[in-house]
Length: 255
Image (cartoon, rainbow, N blue to C red; front, side, top):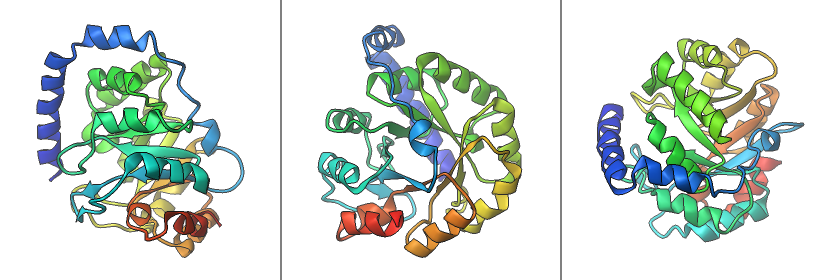
């Protein structure tokens, strides 16, 4: 599944380069406001919530067919989210780069673009459409790519959440100089989820890094575990977009 997603994403990026040439994006980047600080909102005491806008997933299919992304974004602000993650992958997650721009127009929180990012073009695109930070998945990037994308992101004022799932990926993230490390509790090859992945990898991450636990966070008891393990933030999507009452669910997770 991961290989299929990446192959299709490469085709999409090449098509977008033809439709919106890089030089055009660079001109638009120069006119953008400075990005918001994604790091500061995840720092400090307690656990901070990155609330995700996600309509579907490869493992569960359609999560919320009636999702109104701008109203959901406003609800996330009202519920106390520190930042908002926006899925922009179109085929398996039913997202769009236009969703990022739509959310940017209605909220003032830092926005994380969550997608399969491997090409410098996507960084300029993220900046133009309103991202303040973006996801880099160690599993799909070589060390050279990771280093290059982090360097370019910094030059554009973007922060990167570098996602890892095992010890070797943690090592590569640290080697690249990543300051925000996301521990994905979901294995991207099998899609199985184990919350203990966060506990297993945390000792390998030095103090001073911002640590985000991702995937499989559904209840207050999950958050209490993660608080004990001293993560800085949680990224929650499915539990929120499938909730009957989003604000009540956010209150449960933020207690």
